[in-house]
Length: 256
Image (tube, rainbow, N blue to C red; front, side):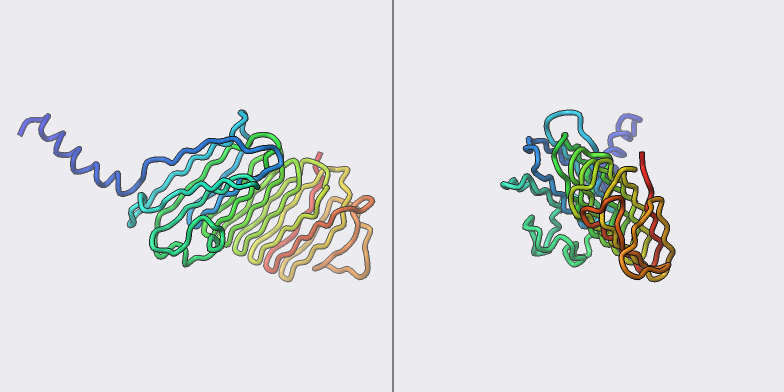
């Protein structure tokens, strides 16, 4: 067998293995009006949103697996009056991009495909990320940010209001603008680390069961308080900020 023939045989043998482990990247771009929301629904993998430099939303999804066929996981795009919703839809799961079954582990149906979303968000467009098994990261977008997962960490920074929820994971959140809406940060097994602008005014409610609490802001306490719970006003008061965990600490930082 010649060297050239051997190379062709090896290439033919390797190609199916490569195809089985990673599908062709999914790419989508489109216009979403200011004030509307881009929503990503994942089940197994990661979600990352970052500030875009153009006028369109850009989405890339990378599908990989060790056992299952990554091509079986479809990426659906559903425009609506609220913006656009993009979902990872697993085979034989009985769900689609309606959002009703996105946060159910059963939606994966024992499929080990991981979907890594990367989203670029234009100015003044909001973003929401829903996940089950994996982290959600939202990096300094110029709009509102909401992040939800079950088994994973949340790291989010935005100029408008921020919301973050997980069950088994830590939350690190930064709000770069004045608090104008109520914000919530909730986990069970993890800590919460929140940074607000130095001149913030809000109504704070924070509690932990197994952890400590600290704040850089003076708090005008409302009612009773202790080392595990606190309620009061930051500055002159304002929108509600709720921070709750069971097994973890709570840290409130004063930003620039």
